[in-house]
Figure: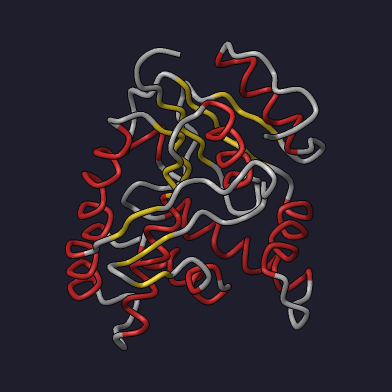
Length: 232
Protein backbone atom coordinates (compact mmCIF):
# COMPACT_ATOMS: atom_id res chain seq x y z
CA UNK A 1 0.00 0.00 0.00
CA UNK A 2 1.23 3.48 -0.77
CA UNK A 3 0.48 6.61 1.24
CA UNK A 4 -1.55 7.02 4.41
CA UNK A 5 -4.82 5.18 4.72
CA UNK A 6 -7.66 6.01 7.06
CA UNK A 7 -10.27 3.50 8.18
CA UNK A 8 -12.85 4.49 10.78
CA UNK A 9 -15.00 2.18 12.88
CA UNK A 10 -17.90 3.41 14.99
CA UNK A 11 -20.51 1.64 17.08
CA UNK A 12 -21.86 1.10 20.59
CA UNK A 13 -20.03 -0.59 23.46
CA UNK A 14 -19.72 -4.34 23.09
CA UNK A 15 -20.08 -4.38 19.30
CA UNK A 16 -16.45 -5.46 18.92
CA UNK A 17 -14.89 -2.17 17.81
CA UNK A 18 -11.68 -2.44 19.82
CA UNK A 19 -10.94 -6.06 18.93
CA UNK A 20 -11.66 -5.49 15.26
CA UNK A 21 -9.82 -2.16 15.03
CA UNK A 22 -6.75 -3.67 16.67
CA UNK A 23 -6.70 -6.67 14.33
CA UNK A 24 -7.40 -4.52 11.28
CA UNK A 25 -4.62 -2.06 12.11
CA UNK A 26 -2.18 -4.94 12.44
CA UNK A 27 -3.35 -6.45 9.14
CA UNK A 28 -3.03 -3.13 7.27
CA UNK A 29 0.19 -2.08 8.97
CA UNK A 30 -1.39 1.10 10.34
CA UNK A 31 -1.32 2.76 13.78
CA UNK A 32 -4.40 2.31 15.97
CA UNK A 33 -6.26 5.37 17.26
CA UNK A 34 -8.30 4.20 20.25
CA UNK A 35 -10.39 7.29 20.94
CA UNK A 36 -12.12 5.56 23.82
CA UNK A 37 -8.76 5.39 25.59
CA UNK A 38 -8.42 9.16 25.22
CA UNK A 39 -11.76 9.87 26.89
CA UNK A 40 -11.08 7.22 29.52
CA UNK A 41 -7.78 8.94 30.29
CA UNK A 42 -9.53 12.28 30.78
CA UNK A 43 -12.00 10.59 33.14
CA UNK A 44 -9.17 8.92 35.05
CA UNK A 45 -7.25 12.16 35.53
CA UNK A 46 -10.43 13.90 36.72
CA UNK A 47 -11.16 11.11 39.18
CA UNK A 48 -7.64 11.18 40.59
CA UNK A 49 -7.94 14.94 41.10
CA UNK A 50 -11.32 14.64 42.78
CA UNK A 51 -13.10 16.49 39.97
CA UNK A 52 -16.70 15.60 39.14
CA UNK A 53 -17.06 14.12 35.66
CA UNK A 54 -19.90 16.55 34.90
CA UNK A 55 -17.84 19.64 35.75
CA UNK A 56 -17.39 20.93 32.21
CA UNK A 57 -14.95 23.72 33.05
CA UNK A 58 -12.44 21.65 35.00
CA UNK A 59 -12.77 18.52 32.87
CA UNK A 60 -12.32 20.57 29.69
CA UNK A 61 -9.16 22.04 31.18
CA UNK A 62 -7.88 18.49 31.73
CA UNK A 63 -8.64 17.60 28.11
CA UNK A 64 -6.90 20.71 26.82
CA UNK A 65 -3.74 19.88 28.76
CA UNK A 66 -3.83 16.12 28.22
CA UNK A 67 -0.44 14.66 27.31
CA UNK A 68 -1.25 11.20 25.96
CA UNK A 69 0.67 8.81 23.79
CA UNK A 70 0.17 5.25 22.64
CA UNK A 71 2.55 2.34 22.38
CA UNK A 72 2.78 0.07 19.37
CA UNK A 73 0.33 -2.73 18.83
CA UNK A 74 0.97 -5.95 20.78
CA UNK A 75 2.69 -8.78 18.95
CA UNK A 76 0.69 -10.94 16.56
CA UNK A 77 0.74 -13.77 19.09
CA UNK A 78 -1.06 -11.55 21.62
CA UNK A 79 -4.18 -10.50 19.68
CA UNK A 80 -6.16 -9.62 22.81
CA UNK A 81 -3.42 -7.67 24.58
CA UNK A 82 -4.21 -4.01 25.15
CA UNK A 83 -2.29 -1.26 23.42
CA UNK A 84 -0.16 0.61 25.95
CA UNK A 85 -1.37 4.08 26.93
CA UNK A 86 0.57 6.72 28.84
CA UNK A 87 -0.61 10.01 30.29
CA UNK A 88 2.57 11.94 30.82
CA UNK A 89 4.97 9.39 32.29
CA UNK A 90 2.17 7.33 33.87
CA UNK A 91 1.23 3.99 32.29
CA UNK A 92 -2.58 4.01 32.53
CA UNK A 93 -3.23 0.98 30.32
CA UNK A 94 -4.94 -1.05 33.02
CA UNK A 95 -6.32 1.83 35.10
CA UNK A 96 -8.51 3.10 32.26
CA UNK A 97 -10.13 -0.28 31.57
CA UNK A 98 -12.34 -0.57 34.64
CA UNK A 99 -16.15 -0.41 34.52
CA UNK A 100 -16.09 2.75 36.62
CA UNK A 101 -13.77 4.60 34.26
CA UNK A 102 -15.81 3.37 31.30
CA UNK A 103 -18.81 5.12 32.86
CA UNK A 104 -16.68 8.20 33.43
CA UNK A 105 -15.57 8.21 29.80
CA UNK A 106 -19.19 8.20 28.65
CA UNK A 107 -19.96 11.16 30.90
CA UNK A 108 -16.95 13.32 30.04
CA UNK A 109 -17.40 12.59 26.33
CA UNK A 110 -20.83 14.21 26.51
CA UNK A 111 -19.25 17.56 27.42
CA UNK A 112 -18.96 19.82 24.35
CA UNK A 113 -15.81 21.49 25.68
CA UNK A 114 -14.06 18.16 26.08
CA UNK A 115 -14.96 16.97 22.59
CA UNK A 116 -13.77 20.25 21.07
CA UNK A 117 -10.49 20.10 23.00
CA UNK A 118 -9.73 16.59 21.76
CA UNK A 119 -10.90 16.99 18.17
CA UNK A 120 -7.66 18.37 16.74
CA UNK A 121 -5.59 15.79 18.63
CA UNK A 122 -7.54 12.99 16.95
CA UNK A 123 -7.38 14.62 13.52
CA UNK A 124 -3.62 15.13 13.78
CA UNK A 125 -3.16 11.41 14.41
CA UNK A 126 -5.55 10.50 11.62
CA UNK A 127 -3.74 12.72 9.14
CA UNK A 128 -0.80 10.32 9.30
CA UNK A 129 -2.98 7.33 8.48
CA UNK A 130 -4.56 5.00 11.04
CA UNK A 131 -7.45 2.78 11.98
CA UNK A 132 -9.64 4.92 14.25
CA UNK A 133 -12.40 3.55 16.43
CA UNK A 134 -14.97 5.41 18.49
CA UNK A 135 -18.50 6.74 18.30
CA UNK A 136 -18.27 9.79 16.05
CA UNK A 137 -15.29 9.00 13.84
CA UNK A 138 -17.26 8.87 10.61
CA UNK A 139 -19.71 11.66 11.41
CA UNK A 140 -17.59 14.34 13.12
CA UNK A 141 -13.89 13.61 13.47
CA UNK A 142 -13.19 12.18 10.00
CA UNK A 143 -16.29 12.89 7.88
CA UNK A 144 -14.28 12.58 4.66
CA UNK A 145 -12.68 9.23 5.56
CA UNK A 146 -12.67 6.93 2.51
CA UNK A 147 -13.54 3.82 4.52
CA UNK A 148 -16.25 3.97 7.19
CA UNK A 149 -17.82 1.12 9.12
CA UNK A 150 -20.48 0.98 11.82
CA UNK A 151 -20.43 -2.15 13.97
CA UNK A 152 -23.47 -3.28 15.91
CA UNK A 153 -24.81 -6.40 17.66
CA UNK A 154 -27.87 -7.32 19.68
CA UNK A 155 -27.91 -6.32 23.36
CA UNK A 156 -27.49 -9.84 24.75
CA UNK A 157 -24.37 -10.45 22.69
CA UNK A 158 -22.89 -7.04 23.51
CA UNK A 159 -23.51 -7.53 27.22
CA UNK A 160 -21.91 -10.97 27.20
CA UNK A 161 -18.83 -9.58 25.46
CA UNK A 162 -18.64 -6.65 27.83
CA UNK A 163 -18.89 -8.91 30.87
CA UNK A 164 -16.09 -11.10 29.50
CA UNK A 165 -13.91 -8.04 28.86
CA UNK A 166 -14.45 -6.69 32.37
CA UNK A 167 -13.80 -10.05 33.99
CA UNK A 168 -15.73 -9.04 37.10
CA UNK A 169 -17.37 -12.01 38.83
CA UNK A 170 -19.46 -9.67 41.00
CA UNK A 171 -21.41 -8.30 38.02
CA UNK A 172 -24.37 -10.08 36.45
CA UNK A 173 -25.35 -10.17 32.80
CA UNK A 174 -28.54 -8.24 33.58
CA UNK A 175 -26.54 -5.49 35.30
CA UNK A 176 -24.28 -5.10 32.29
CA UNK A 177 -27.29 -5.07 29.96
CA UNK A 178 -28.86 -2.25 31.98
CA UNK A 179 -25.59 -0.29 31.96
CA UNK A 180 -25.26 -0.68 28.19
CA UNK A 181 -28.83 0.49 27.63
CA UNK A 182 -28.16 3.54 29.78
CA UNK A 183 -24.92 4.29 27.96
CA UNK A 184 -26.53 3.79 24.55
CA UNK A 185 -29.21 6.31 25.45
CA UNK A 186 -26.66 8.83 26.73
CA UNK A 187 -24.26 8.41 23.80
CA UNK A 188 -27.01 8.57 21.18
CA UNK A 189 -28.92 11.39 22.82
CA UNK A 190 -26.15 13.84 23.59
CA UNK A 191 -26.32 17.16 21.76
CA UNK A 192 -22.67 17.22 20.70
CA UNK A 193 -21.40 14.46 18.39
CA UNK A 194 -23.94 11.77 19.27
CA UNK A 195 -23.34 8.11 18.49
CA UNK A 196 -24.69 7.70 14.96
CA UNK A 197 -23.99 5.81 11.77
CA UNK A 198 -22.63 8.02 9.00
CA UNK A 199 -24.77 7.93 5.86
CA UNK A 200 -21.91 6.40 3.88
CA UNK A 201 -20.76 3.94 6.56
CA UNK A 202 -21.04 0.21 5.92
CA UNK A 203 -23.22 -1.43 8.58
CA UNK A 204 -21.77 -4.68 9.97
CA UNK A 205 -23.88 -6.73 12.39
CA UNK A 206 -21.37 -8.71 14.45
CA UNK A 207 -23.94 -10.70 16.46
CA UNK A 208 -23.35 -13.96 14.60
CA UNK A 209 -19.81 -13.25 13.38
CA UNK A 210 -16.50 -14.08 15.01
CA UNK A 211 -13.66 -11.53 14.70
CA UNK A 212 -12.23 -13.26 11.63
CA UNK A 213 -15.60 -13.00 9.92
CA UNK A 214 -15.92 -9.30 10.69
CA UNK A 215 -12.38 -8.62 9.45
CA UNK A 216 -13.14 -10.46 6.21
CA UNK A 217 -16.23 -8.32 5.59
CA UNK A 218 -14.31 -5.08 6.20
CA UNK A 219 -11.33 -6.09 4.06
CA UNK A 220 -13.64 -7.02 1.21
CA UNK A 221 -15.15 -3.53 1.25
CA UNK A 222 -11.71 -1.91 1.48
CA UNK A 223 -10.44 -4.04 -1.37
CA UNK A 224 -7.73 -5.93 0.50
CA UNK A 225 -7.30 -9.70 0.45
CA UNK A 226 -8.70 -11.53 3.48
CA UNK A 227 -6.12 -12.61 6.07
CA UNK A 228 -7.56 -16.11 6.11
CA UNK A 229 -8.16 -17.95 9.35
CA UNK A 230 -6.09 -15.78 11.66
CA UNK A 231 -6.21 -12.21 12.88
CA UNK A 232 -2.47 -11.71 12.70
